[in-house]
Image (cartoon, rainbow, N blue to C red; front, side):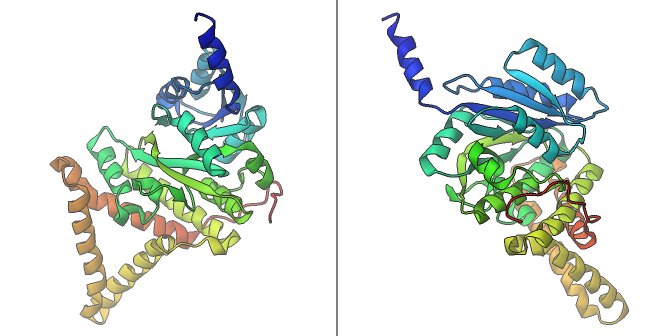
Length: 342
């Protein structure tokens, strides 16, 4: 009996694909150790590696990463001199060897059993990428308000990875566990995109005949931005780079992506026309304000007053920053490398 269990475990492990976890990090010193600890605690049936793609940082992230690698043989560090998220992912993927590649971010934590279930789902469905729910969790009243807004359809539209839903094919997921062959097929992440790299990659996977699969049982804790300025900057960049994404792939447009810029323009026109020409035009911003207050009451139910009081400002910031970024757009990026399917 003392020799039977190891042989059984060996047979089980041999049935599972090799796995690499890749983590792009830059200025994530405060949360990186927790993110890596949650990965290393996973119960995947065979040994796996963790590769950190570390960009230039000014908060000690590089030192934290080096310490983690020094004390844990499963962790390796590779330099990401470009600093961007997509570049960090690509250098970490290139330095890894697993048949399956799981993406993790330095400011999030995988739930127990995440990697095992994701690989099971990947094999069972034949998907190119499997992912689940971005479970936003804040510690301060502001962060908790952002977390509540990020799980509201009024805040983020019908993207299932924000709030859950039925398992099945979808347009995109949070993070992702990929077949390496699928990543090779489409050429990896597009390093020209500052934001929306995940959505753009998932679009190319689906456009090349693959499937992106949503599993609501896969949950990842995500820490929202801690300040209003940080939130506004984040959503402005989301809008900017979604416009670039749609310029490259116009067929990827979803209705939720058109709502923020349309609402921003409609409210602005309503205010100007209403104040200068016809007061009936003020009905447009008034309807938006009423909808925001109603959504805040719904999203803030069960929260304390400090959180509920911040929700209207959080919703307005998310919508208007995203819409403004979309209208302004990014400076046209220069193609850094060719990608398949273009």
